Image (cartoon, rainbow, N blue to C red):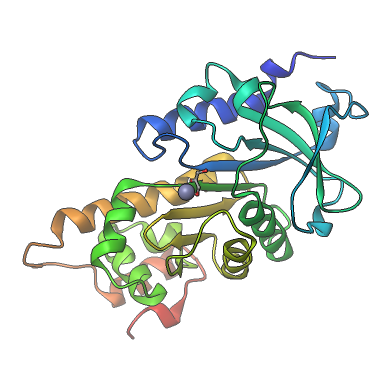
Length: 271
Ligand code: 2HA
Ligand code: ZN
């Protein structure tokens, strides 16, 4: 059996959480990540018959029965993952009943998966129903994206349009746009269900005055989506109080989308 601390998926979780912490997006226990793993790959590192303990999730994830995820821990700090992955991360498998998580590794100082597990697993189910390649769901509190929530209408057409105007590459990176939820109580099945509904349409969902969710086929794609939104929101926040002299026109966004061959939300432009 290989040493789990050398597994590429543990390395990826260490690197991305450290990076996000350094970007200032994940203060204290802010943010959480879930990453669906390949069962055969995990079997190189762990005895899959050895369940350390079981954890009740409080909701039914029946489409994920048997699937294995590495997940940041509830109340754990992104800052600390790199130095102690075994305490701050866990590897869970969704049990036959759909409502129990079987702990295969991690959370070794106590604990359980992120309080946002409903939003994560429901989002995985929603994304997999439209994109079988989806593997990662990421939640974070990017500073400028959050700031923009306070001064910009929380309307997904208007919010997406403003972001698309802020960087030339935006419509190419997230042509499907950004879904937006109003402020809601976090950590609940209700916000999980609302997020998953949006995830059927979007890979990015803003949680009003809280943060953002991203989903993608790997860590780079998912992080890259959120990073691009955050960059656009930063440009917006640097310019929103100044007279706007230039902008990227809708006709230019169409040119971009057509040149790069992306299927964009035409109803989010004013053509
Ligand atoms: O886990 O970010 O939304 C901490 C959070 C909750
Ligand atoms: Zn949060």
